[in-house]
Image (cartoon, rainbow over all chains, first blue to last red; front, top):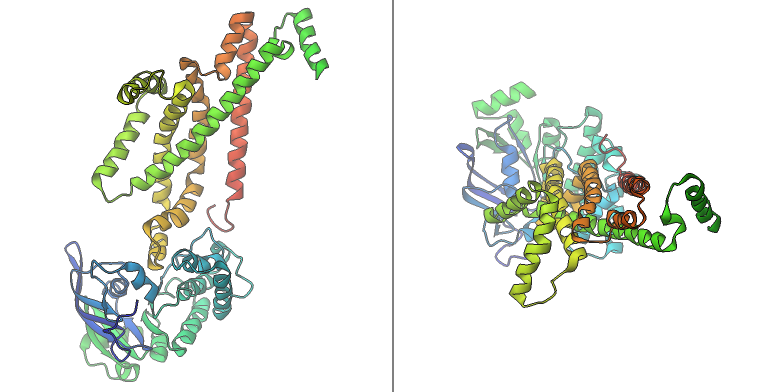
Length: 251
Length: 245
């Protein structure tokens, strides 16, 4: 699993000139970005600007047409790559939670380590309990997703990804489908993770949250990264007119 | 039990209603064996047809075009031809062809074996379509989450898609299995001693067609009722709180 050519002072995730099309529609038109270990990256931008596609390419849920994406130095779109190795390293949380509705919260968390990593079931049960507590869902472990609120489901989904012990977490608009009251409980969970040093890449519309949590903000529009920078300078001294316009509309 | 048999004999003696299967031990035993044959013929065919359905729905998702075409051809063939002709085809044509191929005398499978094979393929063709509809009802986003967690395609099918698909397609599976149970009567045509076949033997010997026809109705109503009851219990036991309805 460990790539000997990669050292922790190099970017853990690196995109170089990535192009991605769906048929004739080019969604990513040469995207490059580097993420260092422990960094928190927020990707913002208008709908249809390719944000979600961008992070879906990082764990190979979407393929790319050209360019390169590496995780810990390993090329993600190498046809010879063992996808399982990639998915162990990169966890992902979705907008619609996508829990397995026929499994309880605890079972949702336990399934992948047992099935995919072939870990001992008792050990996994203990780990899952710890993770359920970490996302503040004690007492809900035997509830089915249909019995949980959106915010609770999303926290189960986060715990489910963490159970694989990933190096990088991808968050794809994870609060977009939630009620305003429950957004906060999910954001707090993500903030805890970031504080522990988890490398996080988030697509988000929560500007206040992005400003608070991000080390770097990337603004995408029309399939390219228009501008990026640390939140202090990004929000107050955006240079590009498109960025300024976007920020003026939402802030 | 003795007084029950005696009561039926009295029914015949006084009213002429001739239910020999109750007071004649020979008829009773062969009729019970007939019902038992219907029972395990149905159970075995139901089981195998579900296996065919699950496997077929999996193969229909294959990336290989020819594989999907083979499954499609199988479905069209068995769905669009009468089950009695399928049974004859297996019992007479396939058996003879295989016997010749392997140099076997006396048949490869016998009438019961071919009835199981033919009925399983018949109902299996419908089951493939039923399960495919169920599989298609599972949102792509749910299987994608499993993919992102490193599940293999087979693990996704086995642990995510199928359990969810089953819940969606149980009502249609239900009616197909009822149909299969009723279709086991075609095995009569190749002398599998199931309920209808022994009923026929009995009414030929005893001249009680009217009585035995009524018995046969009731037997099938009870059998189908039992299957429906089982399926409903199953449906209930896998119901997920807060999912569906």
